[in-house]
Image 1 (cartoon, rainbow, N blue to C red):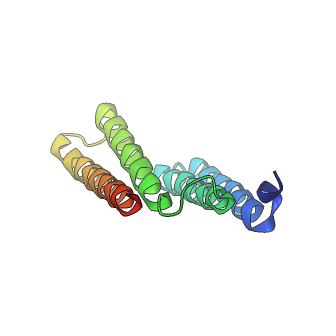
Image 2 (image 1 turned 90 degrees about the vertical axis):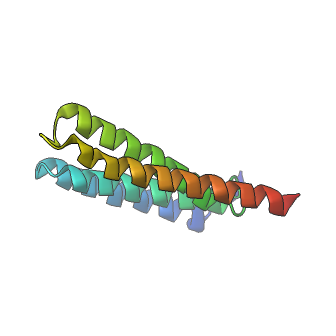
Length: 120
């Protein structure tokens, strides 16, 4: 339990909550969904860095977890924007978001396979 209450663990988590919350609030105030997404991303990354410092996540798995999480996040955001009709008369623009999500997914899965092979 002592490893959870170290400065190197708590500091990124607190900074992630403060910085991410501030960016999200600024994005909501200015009606800027991109800034809200950046706030959520910064918050998530910093919290995951703090959790990684505890040793809960095996060494070498932080990057694949982040890649898979962002692949899901981008796919969901792209789907949401597509269903809202934000692309207007050019819905094929959503393919860019889906391709980026697919690339992140494939790279994350590849990194997990490399991690598993190196442990065998």
